[in-house]
Image (cartoon, rainbow, N blue to C red):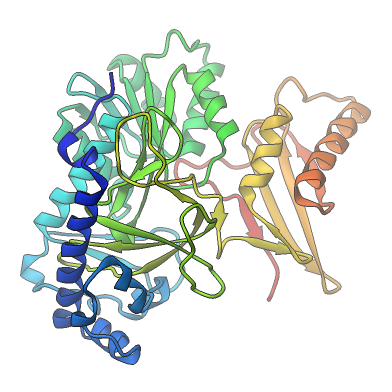
Length: 433
């Protein structure tokens, strides 16, 4: 039986959802105009005022904002409430230069907790579950975001944070954790380690995995599910919009439901900014409809996906987004060809490799070069050089078939690519462009 946290919202009629969105959008635009000079300036530059926004269709009149705007406004430039009304900040991880700092009022935190509680419930979680959270805590939104939803749902929450894999496994086994929340690459590493320790899927108490914060393929999902004996679900979010819980997977596993009572989604052409019709592949743009401290209007996520309003078997009526197919800014252009790391991952898993790989891009004599370093499985690892070369050629051909260009493939020893308890470093771009 399908589980919901707030069924009256999650399964609301579409026309009711649109009415909520229109009312909230008008209030939020007015809020940003009156309390954030940066927004007022950008809107004036585009010749738009709050009274021009009377329906959802008018949202296209508003200017986009990007991560560059947020960095330029560091630290308080987009703050829309007095600092005394803020109760927390979070910040993006792994960026260079000025970081993006997001502010939260208590109402913002409560809204965020509702969103992540919906995500856990959609995966089948209840107040009888033990929720093991191996996302990082601290400034990163992952740990704190899922933690709040787990508390709100009533799970026993294990705030393990990231790292110390042996301790993670000890708590999972001893506390009989039933839900695992972490990045997919760390879930794959935990699965690999537990298998090496001799644990079979039947012996592992986990039933549910909620994974996000980085791209992962359907093949990787199936591999994790098989090794851990779980059903794995997507969760999506950004620090700029609050954190994990903007969207989440359900029992249908046919995309992620966006919490439309709090976020409005558009798909645009990443080159022209033109809003595209439903069903088109393009860049996801999100507006936070009721964030108090840190209002975000038409934020360019750079994530490439598709939106659909087709009826979902889970009963939820909120729009679904596909798993991001890549990022418009992380997309690699190799000799004129667009390459997403997720394409490489699909080929690897289809050929029996684990998702332990690294893409190294360089430019030699004005020509782009690309090397894919792939870990062999223990079964493939041999001193027979000819056999290894046959595996390499077969994999190189598979990558060429999906990308349309030839790249160098190097097979390396098992466990020779550095593991991460957070986001895996998949791409090293050495080009000076």
